[in-house]
Image 1 (cartoon, rainbow, N blue to C red):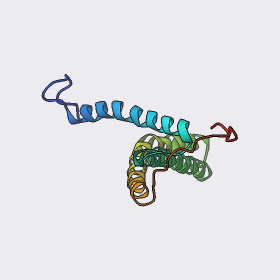
Image 2 (cartoon, helix red, strand yellow; image 1 turned 135 degrees about the vertical axis):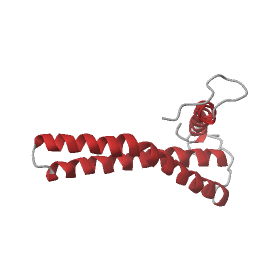
Image 3 (cartoon, rainbow, N blue to C red; image 1 turned 180 degrees about the horizontal axis):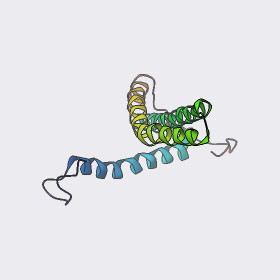
Length: 142
C-alpha cells in the first residue's frame, strides 16, 4: 500500500528501512548487554541495563496480554456462534484482527510505556553497586 521510495543504500534511504537497519543493530546489542550483566551479577549493573530489562519484559508482557485477550475473545465467540462453521469464521476473524493486527500495536505500546517506566526507575531508584568478591568461596555461582 505504501512502498518504500528508495531501497538502495545511499543518500535517499527510506526512513522505514533506516529504522529497520538501526533496530537490527541496536536490539541484539541491548540483549547482549542484558546477558553480560546477568552473567556477572544476576542484576543490572547500569542504568542502561535497567531500561533494557524494562523494555524487554514490558514488550513480552504486552504480547502475552494481547494473546490472552485474543484467545479469550475466540472462546467467547465459540459460545455466541450458532453452529460450528460460524464459530470457525468468528475464530478466523478474531485471530486476524486481534492476533495479527493487534499484536504489533500492543507490543509497541507496551515497549513505549516500559521505556518510560524504565527511565524513571533507572534515574530515581537505581544506584550502581560494586560486585561483591567471593573471598571465602562460600557464595553460590549464578
